[in-house]
Image (cartoon, rainbow, N blue to C red; front, side, top):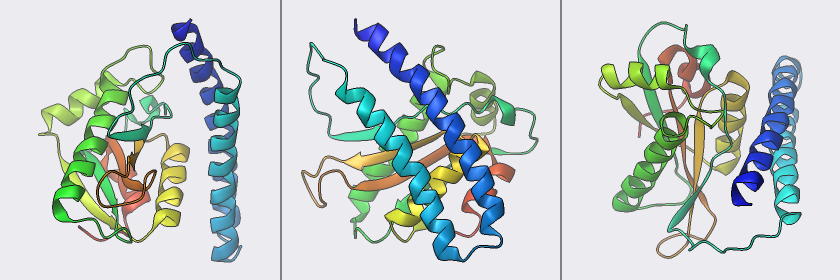
Length: 211
């Protein structure tokens, strides 16, 4: 029963994000002539619709077993990155850290670890996932598993980066804190991106500063 439920959700996520990617692509070009405020509203609307549809699917499913709550949770929408396999150059992972939360160094390190593991789990561990891409993983492993940490001012900016990753086909994972220590429960703390070609990641994070 649980397997059928997960397959059903994954099938729906594929449709949702295909729509999201197409919408964002159109929004990008419109953004060249629209004010920045309108551009941000368009991105927010894409993410809102995707999350709303996913939540509505969850509400229709009766779960027979309750899983133990994890310390942190991640948004593991499956993004197909196979189209990036032919892009040459270095492959790396980017960890984008929100600065407005005021996380201490130890907390930040833990959240980055969650994001890195979340990205790896999505792209490397399950052949049944749409996000599974062993070719990209092998390039990353052979290249020394490069990672970079970057600063993100707030959640709104993180949402924009996440939406752009979806549009470009970059594996991505958003970590939400459980709220047991320093920050409010459900806070999006770190956006993990990749592994993906540096040339593509730069289109998403090129204007961010190093952490």
